[in-house]
Length: 208
Image 1 (tube, rainbow, N blue to C red):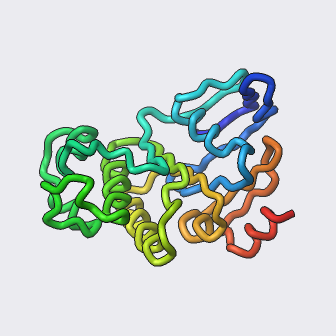
Image 2 (cartoon, one colour):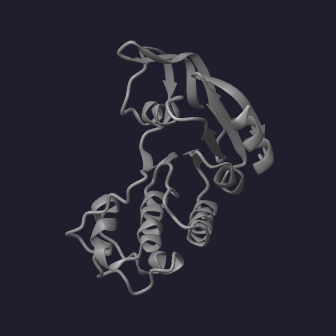
């Protein structure tokens, strides 16, 4: 099982979670939504081991893949070298072609468009042999058309090797499009838990 069990977490005097328990089902993409400061990113940090709980149990996975808001590509390395830095030596030409980066292996990140760089980050995360993929607002800042293209690229990669994935987002449209389950947080607790979430239900819950 991957999840949190009776977790308490504070930063200084600010309590984030009090007795929070969430279980993430295997091979499902779960979205976490809620306003700023409710603890969405803290959940990712707990699951990845970057942050420890004050008490309670974190049932995580090792290793994990992490996709951040920023691309976090090494600017002095080529596309192939950025993959090799995480994945080791290999021929990634076919994998690059799968995400629309055919023939770009010797390019540097500065020569990639924003959408290309995002797809490369997803490719790197999905090729890494992890049990858990953590996604911290990875579609933020993309225009609408590009956002859906990048979301489709991620889903295509994930379907080839399904794993437990946790997506943090502010956007109910992203959650409904990518995830098969959506959890809404409020005041450090689970406010709502949707299977097969739809945009209107999520938007309504977030506005309540």
